[in-house]
Length: 188
Image (cartoon, rainbow, N blue to C red):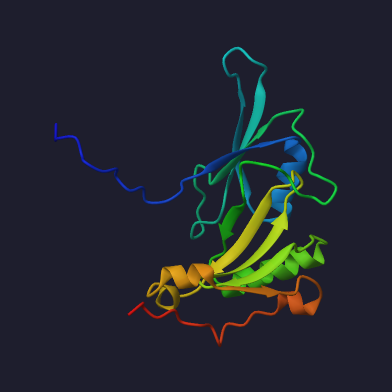
C-alpha cells in the first residue's frame, strides 16, 4: 500500500444529487415533462427503522445513453411548502443543469415558456448563459449552456463576476446574444 497522500484526491465532478421533496408524483411530472429527464428506477428506503420512503432516480441524456442516475428524489411528507412567492428556504442554493449546446438550450427555453413555466431570472454569466426557474418544491433550477472554454479560462474570476440580467417574459426572454460575448483575458 502506498503512503498516505498529503492532500485530497480531486473528484472528476458531481456524480448525482438526492433531494428531499414533499410530493414525488408532482416532482416526477415536472422533472420528466418540463425538464426532459428519464426515470430509471425507484425503491422504498427504510432507514433506521423509520417509515419507508419512496425514492425515484432520473437520468439525463448522455450521448443517447442513460446513466444509473444524475438526480434522485426522496419523498418526505411534511416538508414545508414554498413561500407564496415560490421561494424556499433550503440548504440547496440551486441545481444547475447543463444542456448540450446553445441550440438545445434555446429549444428548452421556448418549450418551458410555451408550457407556462415562469422564468425567474435570465442571465449572461461569463462562462454560461442561464435561465433560472423553480420546481414544484420551490427549488431553484438553473438551465445553462457553457460558453467555449477560451472565453473564460484566461480569467475565471472576471468570468465569475460577469453578470448581465436579461428579460424574463415574451420574445425577449428567448433571445440570446452569442456573437458579442466578452473574452476574459488573463490578468497581467
